[in-house]
Amino acid sequence: MARVNSNYLKLVSRYLFSEVAKRTKEFVEKNPKAPVIKLGIGDTTQPLPPSIIKAFHEAVDEMAKKETYKGYGPEQGYDFLREAIAKNDFGSRGVQIDPNEIFISDGSKCDTGNILDIFGQNKIAINDPSYPVYVDTNVMIGNTGPAMKNGQYEGLVYLPCKPETDWAPSVPKEHVDLIYLVSPNNPTGTAIPQKLLEQWVKYARDNKAIIFFDAAYERYIREPDIPHSIYEIKGAKDVAIEFRSFSKTAGFTGVRCAFTVIPKDLKGYDEKGTAVALNDLWNRRHTTKFNGVSYPVQKAAAACYTPQGAKEIDGVIAYYLDNAKIIREGLKKAGFTCYGGVNSPYIWVKTPGKLTSWEFFDMMLGKLDIVGTPGSGFGPSGEGYFRFTAFNSLEKTKEAVDRIVKFNWKSI
Ligand code: PLP
Image 1 (cartoon, rainbow, N blue to C red):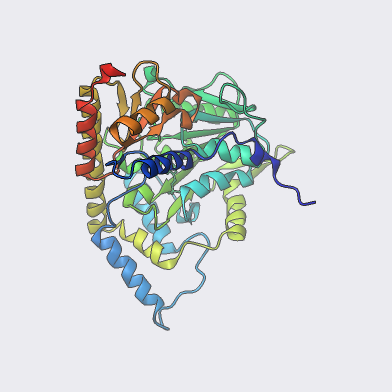
Image 2 (tube, rainbow, N blue to C red):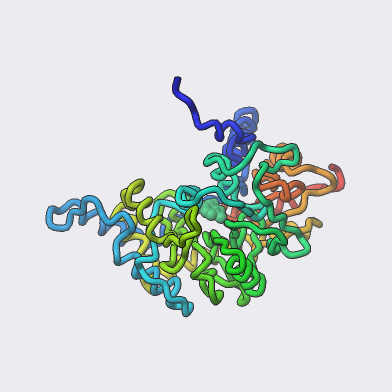
């Protein structure tokens, strides 16, 4: 009898975005002429900028010639990319990261899930609401009990984020071992300011805890007091792993490239309390279970760090942030309370009246032909909220906002 991993049976519902896609598909099948605008899933829409595409093509051409053909590459990534990251993403901010502390991968979704492979049983805290992968991967690996009626899983510590703190999670009173922080946050679009991140690093140092810092939206940060990397905080290299992705930075959602930083000084502990270097453990895991990102993709990623590539990427990000501003201001005009959209492509909105997140989803789709994402899908603290993304075209974004502004909200 082949047994399944019964932890999977604890997962309460299908993955949030699959449910959004399913409901949208059903709606479109019933209403084929409806002019549906999608401001739901956080997927980029603008093509890869010219310098990135050029580097990508050139690398593909190299694969066509005997002299330049490449087979398996280093699992951890090519030096040219690791060195460019160390210099441009960290060195330029005064942070010393060695290229050997950087592991190139095919996505932060995989990395934030797979990282659990190298950890044992721990008390785990997750900021709520946040990217659903953190909770679900902990359920899958057996770090939780069953789902409870309040929408939480037994055994996890939820760090409820509240509007009063602009959705930034406060340091808990209790002890935890692993902490997921995401800044700028998906879904709330808000970021963790320097002072609060300092408190988190102190907490982690005092508790011998480790912070998983997901900075997938780092490039969207505009305000000066928001750290781009957790390693900008003194002492963080002893207590934090950072995840970064080219997905939202450079339109690589379909191309796939990301990286994880595990400093050499970062330690976990075995059963006897002996310190173990996490860089070594992850290196072992990565080289055993992963065979590297393709050469052309890494060449395309490296082109993001050329002066021209960086300029082009910044242009695309500015385009999305302009859309975010249009959504934020339009929603405010229509009387909504909203957050985010300044340092990120997400706008987080309080649903009107007593509507739940999913009721508002159905209403937006049914009456305005607009798809967004229900906040409750990102954790119990997201109930009563809704996420819009700025990833659609300027024209579609304006049209959606126009519909929202013109709608008679008193009628619901
Ligand atoms: N982390 C956060 C916070 C995200 O919102 C996303 C994607 O939406 C990811 C990670 C996944 O990134 P990737 O495309 O690199 O897997």
